[in-house]
Amino acid sequence: MKYSYYLLLLLLLAGGQPAWAQSGRDQAEALVAYQQANSSPAGAALRASLSQQSSGFVGDGSFAFGFLRTYAGRYLPIPGLRYHAGLQVLEVQDSVNIEATHLWTAAGLRGFDVGEPDDEAVPVRRFRSRLVKEGSAGVRREFVEVLTAVDAGPLLLSWLYSVALTPTANGHRPLVATLLAGPGTMGNEPLRPLEPTQAAVLRLFGSRADDVRTFATTNQLDYTRPADIARMMDHYNRMVVVK
Image (cartoon, rainbow, N blue to C red; front, side, top):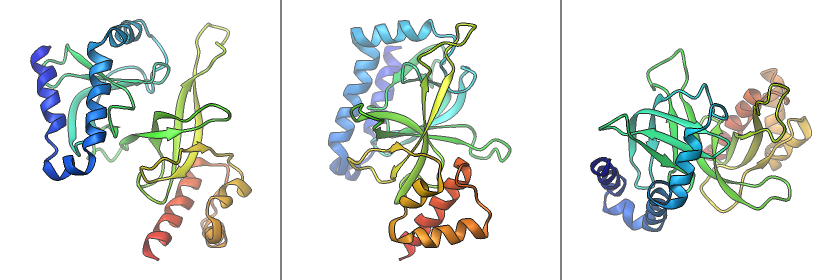
C-alpha cells in the first residue's frame, strides 16, 4: 500500500512545469485533501464508514472502469472506481494492487469519468468537482454529474446526488438527484438548483433567450426534460463561443 501511495503522489505531481506554475496552489490543496482522506484519523473513520455501506452509491455500488482528472492536468485510467453520494467520497482501486483502494473527496480532484470512451452503447458518465449552493445552505464543493456536452462552457447543467433524509418503508434511503445550473468555468460562482420550467430555463440565457426559445420550438424540446434543457444550453454555449 505504501508503494502505491507514493506512486500515486508522483503521478499527481507529474503535470509538467507549466501546469504547476498555473495551478500550483490547486495541486497543493488537492494533495492535502488526498492525504487527509487516506492517512489521517478522519480518513480512517471515513474508510470504516464506507466499508459498512450497502446503499447510497451512484450506480449499483460495484467498481467500474474509469479515469481520474487531476489538478496536475493528468487523465489517469483506473481499473475500478465507485462514488458514494451519502459520504461524498470516491473510492478508487489501486492500479498496482486492486485489493487496495484510495479515497478522494471533491477537494482533491478536478473530477472523474466512469465508463469506456470507446463503448458507444454505454456513454461515459462525467463527474466534476464544482461549488454548489442549495437554499440557505452555504457554498460547498461537491462532485456533480455533467449533462451538457462540455463541462467548461459558458453554462453547465448537472445532477447533484444526495441520500434522502427520510427512509422508505423498507428502511432504505434512496438517492435524490437535484438539477443544478450555472457558469461552466471554474470560478467562485456556484451552481444552483434549477426549476425545470420554461421561465426559469430561458432566464439563464439573458439576451439570447429568444434565440434559444426558437431553437427549442424548432426541435420540439421540452423545458421539463433535463436532456432537452442540456441541448438548449449546448446551443447557447455554441452561440456565445462563436460570437
